[in-house]
Image 1 (spheres, rainbow, N blue to C red):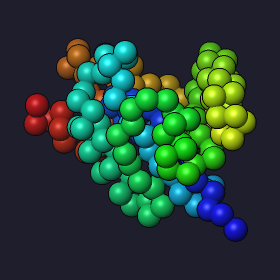
Image 2 (cartoon, helix red, strand yellow; image 1 turned 90 degrees about the vertical axis):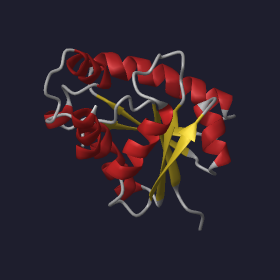
Image 3 (cartoon, rainbow, N blue to C red; image 1 turned 135 degrees about the horizontal axis):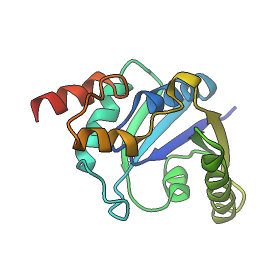
Length: 159
């Protein structure tokens, strides 16, 4: 029987408690979860890709079946390179669902129907957290301690 491997791609700019919750829940559903930290210049990330990878590694350290890698290119190519047949995506709002459904359809077509997307809704306590809002709070020197894991806070406190 083959292992059920899923990828969880994203920019994680920065990783939030909501992301960590999705990863933890996915780790209970799959034999292995591979977090793909996108090196996406199109999104103009606030934080360096290597810093985002390091944060993800530290944030998921307790989860034995989760690994983190830098991801370049298409999610379906990343999935294929890691022998993953599943893509995990979280959503918070109905707008997220519409967007994610279109991406899932595109991924399925690009992978010749070999890549299935699994959606996990955000828990109520994380539904309001987005990396975009967290970046805005950081830019305005606000307190993001309720929204990000300690590894991100440690970096921000030292910056």
